[in-house]
Amino acid sequence: MSLLASPAPGSVARERALLLLAGAAAAAVLPALVRRARRRGLLPATAAAAGTDEGRSTTSSAGGGAGAYETRKAVDEYLQFHYGRPEDILPYDCGPKEALRFAERLAMLCERHCTALQDFTGERKPPLAIDVGCAVGGATFELARAFPHVLGIDYSQTFVNTANTMKERGWMRYRAVEEGALTVERVAAVAEDIDRGRVRFQQGDACNLPAELGQVDAVLAANLLCRLPDPAAFLARCTSLLRRGGVLVLVSPFSWLPAWTDKGSWLGGYTDAEGKAVWSADTLKAILSVHFDLVEEAEVPFLIREHRRKFQWGCSHAMVWRRK
Image 1 (cartoon, rainbow, N blue to C red):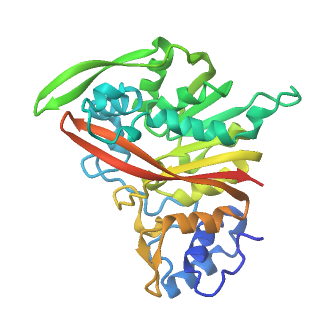
Image 2 (image 1 turned 90 degrees about the horizontal axis):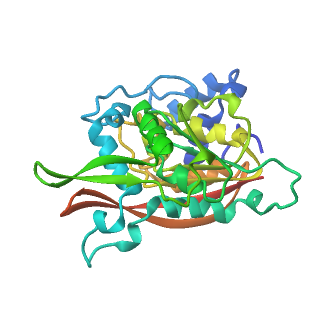
């Protein structure tokens, strides 16, 4: 089925998503589609087509945007989130224990469904996984338990530098807030049974991944989609990035905010021109089913510690897709 095929009547979410994914291959017809979509109210007048820079947020870190990840505060918070011991993050008998060990559970989703890991014939190259939006590398290292080669990519150079420090020496100090201005120093560490030599990190843009990456067997994108200026461009790239049979693991709370993603590029969380609610999961199913089979959906809770008596509990929607 063509990415430019007309949607079924009333399927405005599908038409909007297909329009965003049209990309360079449809350059000759894209302007007409954009005009038609704007007339029907599927895209606002300032919405960007996939592959352009319109609508990209330049908001400071105080209100969101990529700059939020370049601070020492963000590094400390993510080191704690990715590597903190469960008893340090949630030191109480009460509380959502099932939301701990987020990075480990993400890696297990990839491992469970990647058929390349079950190929013992030796006729193909060793499986390769990419963790897009890897932050400080927690899930990237967990993927290395099963995958012989893992690449972590993040837009934040500060996060990539931190992840490389974790690779080089296996640990890094961070400060956790206890109460007010009171903090405690802790150590983030990669598990000793993980081969850090299997992992590498590089800075990169999820909306413009380089062709030099070739094709891979698994792509993990955890809590990433709703932090991208152009999530449709990332999804379109995943089609060529994955080998046939490869798995795309999308995990997202769908926390769409204009500071990160121009509203015209949201995949859901709004009402269409007919007044119907558009849900992100439905949009993903509409656009990815062209080249992928949905093999699992799951609820993936996570817990972020702000201080010892305040936490952010979230529940991301996980979707595992296999490339046709």
